[in-house]
Length: 366
Ligand SMILES: C=C1C[C@]23C[C@H]1CC[C@H]2[C@]1(C)CCC[C@@](C)(C(=O)O)[C@H]1[C@@H]3C(=O)O
Ligand SMILES: O=C(O)CCC(=O)C(=O)O
Ligand SMILES: [Fe+2]
Image (cartoon, rainbow, N blue to C red; front, side):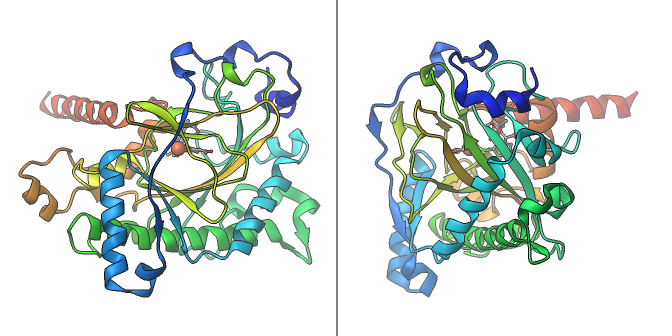
């Protein structure tokens, strides 16, 4: 069945189609609310010493445990956040043929996707997504490459595409916040606060809009399956509905929405950059019977071809290097071509990397 058509009808389906039904072991409910710090960034962003130390301590404890925290007084304009949600709502309300026209460039992750049905044949996520790249230095508005030519008059106001303008500004604010958070993470790890700056400054990050339609049988499926983000740092803004779960203390726990906060989670790449000190956060999204849910996820990524390696100061403090050097380009390629990201992406990527190096070496020796 065409994933796009499926997506436009998902909420009216009385029965979850088989390929959207997840095995029982994935569907254990969450009974508790996650107690994770809500870090006030006000003092840190002003450069005040004591609040910075306090924020770094909260972050160190949370990231060593489950890789999750939230931030308030983050400096991002609430009006811009509201507008980004509004533009996302407008896009997902388009008729399915218009959303499908924001085609996914074949073999790329950019554009519209209905339940990833073009990529996977089972355990389909109950969601539709819109993904596009963000790069600081692109003079062209970020989403132009993806869909300016196909979104048509709905979005054109006074000769420009308001949605592009809003997402350009939103992604710019996310990148700026992301760079400050990377600095605060470095401080929390006890290394030079700018030691990761060059790695991320020119990176091409990923903006993803998630729409989770309501579901008549929500206990049979998942909006997004259990996974650790392969990326470095995720800055997520969820709407008021709720549905994000984090796995901590050996159980799934809920993360009630706070519209004034951003959800921050450590990804696989930053786990390697911290030499394994910080956990890549295992999380998922559930759906419900009555209300659709949306989230804006910004994934901060390093420059594709730069080596991802933990700072020497961390490795010498730890006495052992836990991960081989790799590039984000290789890990992204692995998740898009060879492996569906889940809770074990990083160890499987390392195995794949080592086996492909062995193959290359043996071919060279022939
Ligand atoms: C590099 C990425 C791959 C995914 C989008 C970004 C960061 C999160 C990844 C993802 C959301 C993890 C769960 C599975 C996935 C396939 C999804 O449900 O969308 C992942 C994304 C992807 O591969 O498109
Ligand atoms: O929508 C959410 O709350 C989580 C989405 C997510 O984990 C992702 O897109 O990687
Ligand atoms: Fe995620």
